[in-house]
Image (tube, rainbow, N blue to C red; front, side, top):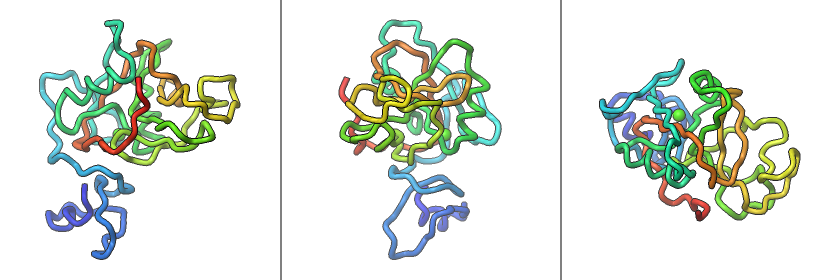
Length: 199
Ligand SMILES: [Ca+2]
């Protein structure tokens, strides 16, 4: 949500300063700014099986990769196609990852909307989220390692997508395997300026 708009409609609570001279930023009330402009009031299609988690106003849809083409790019398109303001899950906080993980099935891993555009030298650098929100640093032990051995710190553009499992910790994968994925309905638009690594 744009800070200026929050003041006008009385929602308030935008944690980012609202100096009129500052560039306009976009974030939900009470949180840090993100890059994209919200699409409007939160409306999640009633036809979907949404779940809620503690401490979040978002709705979540845990999707199965029962077909063979649920690679990251496909999961991304499917979440976006579910409606405006819906996208692969974006973490506002480490707690959101922890609370979501409690809803996940053992042995499965799930694509998220956290990704690393190609280019950084180090595997841990340059991560962002599909709405433009800052990435969270909630990596599993030795992650991210660009798909290499745990602790590898060099990025070669191999594993540019973060997955979550029931441990809540994130790790980076290459996006080509068929995994389950989590869509989030929070009313935020995706940031179309993000350079998604090609399939
Ligand atoms: Ca979220």
